[in-house]
Amino acid sequence: MKMFALGRGELFDFLQKMGRKMDDCGAMSPLRYLLSSNLIGKHCVIVHANELDQADFALLAQPEWRSLSIVHCPKSHRFSSS
Image (cartoon, rainbow, N blue to C red; front, side, top):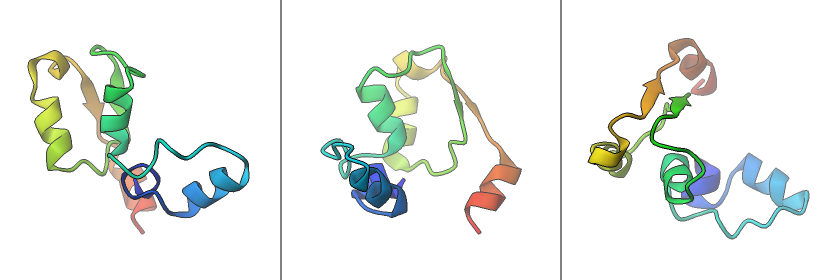
């Protein structure tokens, strides 16, 4: 979340050091990035969507994304938020 939404964080720093272009970071949530970049389709399954914001929910409410499935993983969320 930090990498895509804020343009910082451990993953951002690591990938930048590895030479990845980071110009696609710092503007939007990971979910909005995936949807706006057409990297996933409307019939995909989203897993580990633990950090959605109001803009993500608004986007998911649009008719073209209503068939998108989201799988919540409580154990994974507990691990990653600790």
